[in-house]
Amino acid sequence: MNNISDAHLKVHFRMEVDEDGWPPTTVESLWAVDLGDGTARLDNTPWFVRGVASDDIVKVEVDEEGLWWAGETVRASDNCTIRLIVLRDGGSAAARQTVLETFHRLGTTGEGIEQFRMVALDIPPTADLPPIRKLLEHGEAQGWWHWEEGCVTTAWTDSTSD
Image (spheres, rainbow, N blue to C red):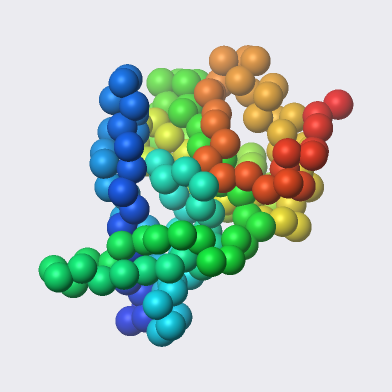
């Protein structure tokens, strides 16, 4: 995420919990920048919300308590959101940091969260997608992590590993 400024606000997303209890919350709040026209630009990578990525522009509505709630995506950013549950070394802070640094060398950004041993990756459209996919698949085959697509683009879907 970029530095938080006075223009930042929390935008809340409602989520459905599946029969396995995932995601572990019914609401996720993401930092965003109010664009002043009933929309906001997301400014961090979602942990659980599906179908949105950093820099997407979403409609927002303010409720009677002053909370900002996300609506539909007005403009997709072409960023992808990929989430990993790190298994190597029990998902330790060092293991999560190694994952972040490894993917950063491939053009991604992201952050880790201890509670769920997770890493959320933000993959910009300028990243070289096939090596990222190949590494994701290799790491899963090695038992280093499980991964899922939180929000992907056509370019991501069209990329293949060799």
